[in-house]
Image 1: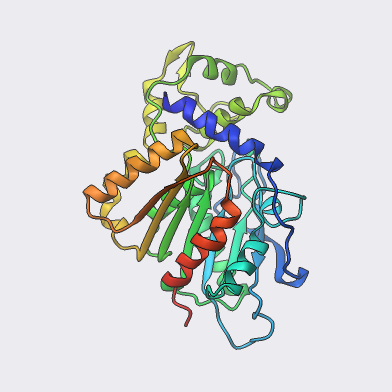
Image 2: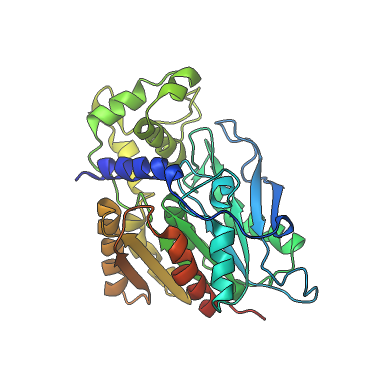
Length: 348
């Protein structure tokens, strides 16, 4: 299957995820804090998104009772079309509820930590956690500004050895991408069902024609999910300040592939980037990749990255489990992801 189709399939599954089920947040309101975090890195982005972002912070059960204690921090990134509000139980039933999953993990024996999630829902419904004049510099926002803000406002252990980075779908992509480029910030990485890993060298002509037909915000509002996903990718990976109102280039022009834009998209594909960052990846204390076996396109790219890391001797774990793109994520945060960071991150 062509990579462009794979990206669209993955995104379409994520769009349906809001109809999943989960237990509502059990954590008291004072342990779920919402703030607006200012960002120089995001300010002035061409697509007109705010220069500050909503962030949700989960405080572990002992936080208020132990005023002298400092905690490791997990930075958690949500997927395309999603938001921190959905992941933290503020918008009804969802396929994941972070507070409930975390509380269960800590009761089961995982060491407590703070969990921080920024809202990456943008004009095109997702930032791709990339560095773009159109969307803003999300790499710097996550790895530098958000980390500094969290350390300044909460009792964190403000050191690399006590920070982890994880994400699902688009957030899994962001985890791998930012992890490659910011090895001095995080100690461990966990990419859940990471999307958008491969280079789309043969763009789908029909999909690109639909994306090219979007000329106004009204057109954008009526576009189907796959078309919006293509626009989000273009905004992140092929920005163009000379092309209002959307400020990006698509990988096809007048029905023909645009080799320059295709190359720019490929340069943002972790499978194409990985061999450049092998020394960086070897610096991590732990790396985990996973995907459901019915999440076919993503499972394929997880296997590919697994092979690359294995061939180059990068210590890591990779798992293909029974499930689709959004099944069992809640359970796996409790039983897999948080125990992993509990073992990896220093808590003193």
